[in-house]
Structures are given as structure tokens and as C-alpha cells.
Length: 447
Image (cartoon, rainbow, N blue to C red):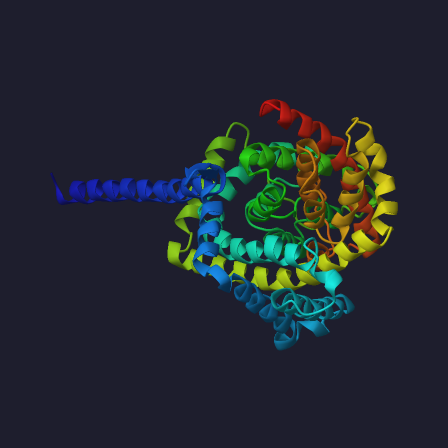
């Protein structure tokens, strides 16, 4: 064999090995991520997804220090806007900085037992701090580590290309918005909104498209959904809950994009995406996934980056959950505000003959304040009501303790008034679909 032939053979062999390495880089992290987030495993007689087992183990190892850990995150979250100067950016930032400082006070009261007795009843601070804040403080950073496996190695890009043909006719958004949608579900609304705002500023989304994605796709992640499912005792049907919630969330979005205020927004943009050649979608998707895997950072770097983002997200939302969540619980228990608001949603729940129709309608209305509140209020309800609560908590997408301030901090032209109208439409439509989904889930699990 000549030197030239040997060189050519070696080059081909190197390319073959390189392609195999890239394919492994695409498949192994993605499959591992799917296993950790979606495949139930039985350990010590308890069946749930591996991520939930990890969080349970972490809390066990922390023991009595878990409350102090959560308090440290809350204090860091309240201090962060003061240290960075972000509190000066807008009135909204100032308001939420104050709420975060109040969250520190509430957390100290929860941990020390100090304060008015009415705040220390089992359904107030102890429940909010022990059942919600501590688990969220653990699951968001731990979940962020493993989210790197799902979002950094080509799976998102591959899915985005494959979903292009359905995005425009159903949701009136470009194909690339599928990446935003998947990033929100497997990452977080903050990641989804970050992507959306960047693409919008580049002129590749119109104002209407960016608003549709921000209010219809950028919901809480699978890690947050685990907390909702655990609070509502739905982990035994986790996969059923996750996929039905995803389906209903995007079905509601498909309807709201055709209704005001979203339907009336400006749809002009400077740069539209190119189409995929006919008959080349699978090949294009495969190459996009491989290209992303090839250019992906090392696993350690990706994990470190995602852990940092997860930690920043945890410290950002925990103080707000503590303060806005407590305010919401107090309003729900001691005022008729959510009773009145719930009346607007009662026809959607009563339509299906649900025994707890009014309770579900009222709980769903509290989701505007904080997406976890409906789950906190409906934890002892029947299966169908609990399942519907879990679905609507996520499919409503918008809540004042976190996602709405995130949207307002972007350049997407959405006012508070428009956001509240979209929330109302999403909640009403979500209830119409979630209750029969609950009956379906009950039938599938045998009662």
C-alpha cells in the first residue's frame, strides 16, 4: 500500500472513529438524562424517578441542617439583587426585592418558631417551608446538574428540527421555537425566556411570536413538576402526569394564540428562518444533533455551568416563593379573594360533575400568585381533583412569584394587563381539559 493510500485510509478511519465518538456524545448523555428524569426505579420499596431518589437521599444526609440550607439560599437570593444592583432596574425589580427580603423574615420565622401563632399552624409556614421550599432548594440545583445531559448534547436541536412542520400551523411560531418549548420543560422557564429574548432581539421572532412563546411555552420544568407531583401524591403516575400535562399545556397554547390579546399583536420581523429541503428532515435533524454534540462543552464544564444556573435560579425563586406563597396562603385562608376569583372558573370544573368542583376552581385561581399554591391547597383532595390541580398549576404558565417578573424583565412587549388576561384564558381552558384528563388517568391506573 502506497503512502498516499495509507494516509487516505488513516484519514477515513479517523473520520469513522470521530463520527462514532460524536454519535456516542449525542446518545449516551441524552439517554442517561431520559433515564434520570423519566424512568421510574424502585429503591427501598419506593418507586419513583432517579432524580427524586437523589433529592430524598440528599435531604436524608442533611438531616436537621436542611432548614438551614434552605435559609442560606433564601438569604443569598435576597442579597443578590442588592449586591448586583439589579433592584434599580425597574419598579418590578424593586417590588420583588422587597418581597425577597420579606421572604427572609418568613424563613427565619419558620425555622425559629418566632412570630404570630396563626403563621405557625400546620398549613402555613411549616407546610410552606418543609414541604415546598426545602425540596425546591434541593431539587433545582441537583436537577440542573442532570439537565445538562438533556439540553447540552444535541437532543434539543434534533427535536427542534423534527418538530418544525407542526409549529407554524398549530402554534403560529417558527420551527426553532420548539427548542424554546422543550428547553422550558426540561430546563426552566428562565432558560426558555433567555433563548426567546435573544432570538427576538436578533429579529428572528416577531413581537407576537415572542409573546406566544413567553406565555405559552415557558412553563416550569420537569424538576418543578416533580415537587408538584410529590405534594399532590402523584409520583406513582409520574409519566402519565408529565405527558398529559405537556399535551394539555401546548393544546391550551394552540387555542390562546388565536384569541386576543395575543392574536392582535404585531407579527412583523426582520429575519425569518429557512425551510428544510423536502425529504431531508430526518437527515437535517440528525446532522443538527450531531453538530451540537460535536461542539458541546465537556461534561464537567456543562455540569458546572448548569449547576451554577440552577443555583442562581434556586436563590432567585426561593425568597419569592416564601413571601408570595405565604401571602397567597393567608389570602386564601382569611379572605374571600380567591373564593370570588374561583367563581369565574367554577363552570369549567362543574361541567364535568366533579365533587370538588368549587374547591378546584378556587385553588386554581391562587396559581396567579404562586404556581405551587393550588397543590398546597388540594393535597388532600380526591385523585381526579389532585391530578387536575397538578396539570393546571403547570399549564397556566404565568404566576407573579417568578415567571411574570422574568417576562417583564425581557424586551418582549407584554404588559401586566395582557399577561393577566392570558393567564385567565389559560387557566380556564386548562381546567376544561385537565378534569377529563384526571378521569382518564384514574381509569388507566385502575381507580
